[in-house]
Length: 383
Image (cartoon, rainbow, N blue to C red; front, side):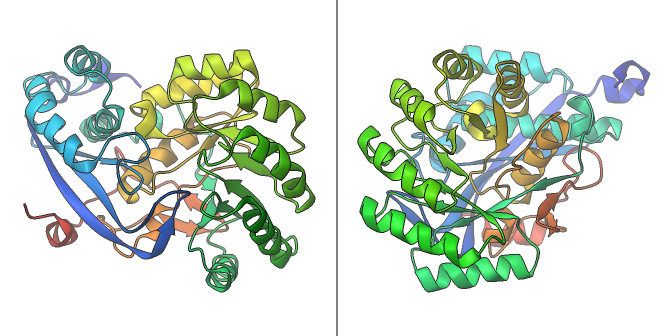
């Protein structure tokens, strides 16, 4: 990309205004995690307007509350409105890296809201130059990402019906079963039944969300392997990297790390300890697309695969994940960019398309999605 050939007006665009709103969107059904469940997903919608009159959009999403990282949409809005937005206004819109570095100097951590800010800035830069974000990341290796559907209702019959519906519609190509909310024996038995019911039509992955002890994992993994499970995500606590390494060494199936790898330096540590086979990339936990790309490059250099994880974003954040996934040389298992499928409502005029078991990269400059202002107004939280 050669920004020097852009019209001087676009090159000189400044950040003029930053706005944020909390939106609350209903799920189609109950979404369960190991220790939490929800029927509504909340997101912080971020708009950054330039002196050219163009607007970049982004979102900051937590997985149904502050249990995962301590971040919440309410605290993110306060941090953005009070501390981060004043550092943005008046800055050159193209200076995405320097602007983010300045934000880091003023506010430590808060990677989720910073990821939403970066998303909006890159969307704005893409619109200023009529380029998609994947072009800003170095090019496109693919136009789609195979996706796995989260099996998390807690009701066996509902889960089986949902799996059939997803496969019949060719919406997904694999399934990931949430574990950790019941006894280990019942959990393993439930997963084995779900895998058997698929009869080879799709692969099954599982995610205990840090709920197991190392002993639990060593007991469960051989049984999961017998049931045909292809991947286990973050079986033990995020700070137990040595336990993850011991589990990975004796596992017959792939071990993926998520909560335990949230930055580039974490990935270096994971590689050094041989604590996983796969790294789950999530824009929010890393602090944005560029930080996630650094994690992916380090993982590949260290011989690990990467996977596109999700916090169940709307089509806005999902589009950002698809742009990152498109720019990666290797993405062997795809990911879980299925937020728009799980949400009963979305925030854009044309939601992400799902077919042939994959999510397809949207067309157009920036993220390639356009806000549906009526939907935004309908679901914006009123204080």
